Amino acid sequence: MPKTTIESLASPSLPLEAPALDDPQLRYSYEVARGEKGVLSFEPYKSLILPYWAFRTVPLAQKSAELLWSIFGSYVERGDLVGADMTRKFIQMGMTRARRYANHKGGRKYGAGGKQLGKWTGEDAGGKRKEKAEASEIFKGYWRRCIASEEYIRLKEEWSRAKQQYLKVHRG
Image (cartoon, rainbow, N blue to C red):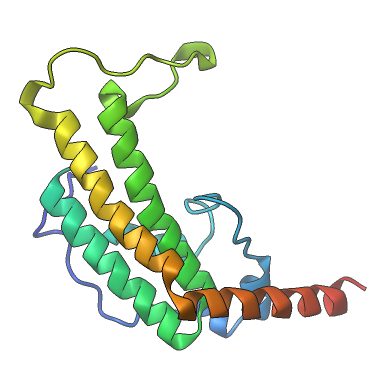
């Protein structure tokens, strides 16, 4: 897989598709959940948003976080909680994955047999740890903006109530 570069991280043609707006079954099969659960498995949103997610360098993380923030805003503006929350998860995953690379050489927290690996010690050759920590902080700032968005919070509450109603009707 080729490495993502600033040049290859093109701005999306907004708005991205919002399939959950037209498909109640898709919309209510989604789970908000804690953290990033489902971010790499809930299609078609994963494939729509993933091309804009990168954290390898500080400039890439900055560009990616900005693009994801614009995607998040576009979904919120159209009332697509699924798209907005999936984008929030990608932003959060940028923060956590970059932090993992800052804390663990090679980004691996666990080794063979599920044994937890130790954290990096010693010299930060080439400043890689520092760069990943900075990338994490970039995403963290955008993640905080997402979860503080009053419109996003309102959408999430409305979606939750609507999902309960949908499940009542379609389960029974």
